[in-house]
Structures are given as C-alpha cells and as structure tokens.
Length: 358
Image 1: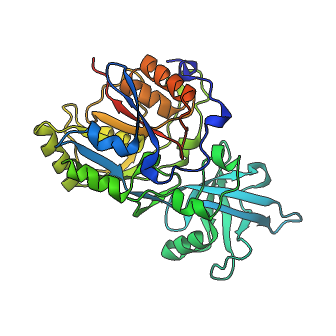
Image 2: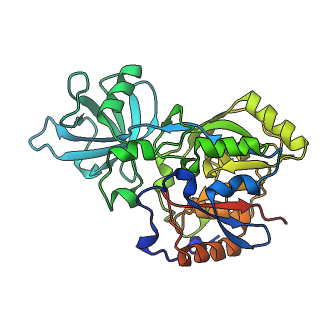
Image 3: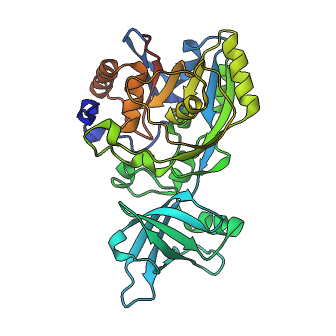
C-alpha cells in the first residue's frame, strides 16, 4: 500500500509533553467495530471488558540508553550523542549517533556527565563499525554487569525526539517514562500504553474478573523512525527481542477456549502475541526476535481488543491500528481526537480499539 494513505495533519499543540496525573485519568477514545466513537477515560476500562477477558502487558524496562560524550584522541574532540538500540554481546552495542559524520571505525568515544560518578568517572567505547542512517557498533571498555551499571550511572532514558526536541528531559521523566510493570531491562523506548496503569486500575480490573498476564518485548529505536519509502512493502522493520512463557501461553489459550477475549495493552504486546500465534489462534511460548510488520490486509489470529496511544502520521504503528480497526475508521477516529483535544504520542491519551470483523 502507498505510505501516503496513512498521512494526516497533526497540530504541534496536540503533542503531550507530560503524562496525565494520575496516570489512569488520561482520556480514552473507544472505537468499536461498527465505527462508533465514545469519549471516556482510562479509568473506565473495566466497564468495557467482560469477566474472563485477559489483559496482556509488556513488562520491559527502559534502560538509560541516552549517552553523551566526546570523541578523543584526535586534534578536535567534538561532542557525541549516542542512543543504544541493540545489545550485541556483553560489551558491544549497536547505537544511533549524532553527528555520525564525526566518527570513523577505530575512534574512541568517552562518555561521561559532569556531576555523575561512574567507576573511574567515564566510560570509553571504540567505534567498531559504521552502518547506514547514523548507526554504529560500539565496543565498550567494560563488560557484562559492570557495563550495565556504568550505562545506568551515566545515561538517561531516551525520550522520543518529538518530546525531547521541545523541552529538556529532567528527573521526572525517569519515573514518568516507566510503566508500573517494568522489571526486565532492555528497552530503549517505553511500551507507552502501559504508562496509563495504576495499582487502583489493576485492582478494579481484577475485581471485574479480568485476568492480567505479562510478556516481554524490548522496544527498539525503530519505533522512533518514520516510514520513508513510498510503498509499505519496501519498509524494513527493525527486529526486537521478545519472550512469552509457557505458563502465560497456556493461561491465554485456556481463557480463550472458555470465551475470554485477549486484550493487548500496546502495540508491542500485540506484535509479540501475533508473532507467537498459530494459524488457529493458539499462542505458543516464544523466545527470540520478531520483525513482524502489520498493515491492512493482515489477518489477526490472537488479539481481539487493543489499548494503545495515538501514533505518528505515516508510522508503522498507525498502519497497525488501521489494519486492526480499518483505515477509514481510524482516520475518522484520529480526526475526532484532534478536534476534541486528545493528547498524542508517548505521554498522551489512549484509544480502546475493538477489532474490525470481516
């Protein structure tokens, strides 16, 4: 399909720069299969689900993947910003860097922020290789847990560029940009639908008879990248690592056999569930990478309902929700959301989507 079919105009004022407080007070646009739109709040979620339905959340934890430093060992020492995007082994990471033109294989980058202490006060990495679009491979001077601690000490959570370009990230973001489910470190972006949850909302859902299950998908920087090609078939998705335990798969299959619906909290949960599903909808245990790219025409096998935020124009995520609920339905829903003042993107409001039939 043509990428421009998924374009729409979005005012800059629609972009949320801070999350709602409390988190479940965010607005929620309910989009039913018949295209009917209803304005609600996330706190109303239990009323839209039935006893026996099963929520699936992503328990990945955002690491402090944003590092600042300088190139050393040459006449000039330009400042370098790096966002770690994929661990390759105990000491090597793939990263997006700015300005990439200032680096060549063999260069040393010294990361460190004044006022923060990390072992010897800094963290060195050698540029092992350069790729396309600002990607490089960094080989760090530390390994394993020592490297993890150094990154934690020196780095900051990498806020999406559409937020970071409009205000300076601060200490509030360290808490705001993690979900209450975050336990497994490895993401460089938050599974943002999970940001709406509070202990009170979880208790209300359980009181309604709705189950809650966890999986892990380490969200990569590909979630920040726009689709630049003219046809969706030409776009290459970045692979992300995920895991669904055998216990979770069995519980979801049992609930579904009894008539319960699978409710994915976020597109990350949906993508991993669909990656793990057989043709008949049975969910298998999963551990490995997925690069599934969902566009209109895809036949959903595992997920019945999706709670998600409002996404970028021309993004793979807007393509996914258009596949789930219908392109025209989602265009109408987004037009309504913009006119009604809904807040977009990572810190924004939510929509509850019921899968289109047929």
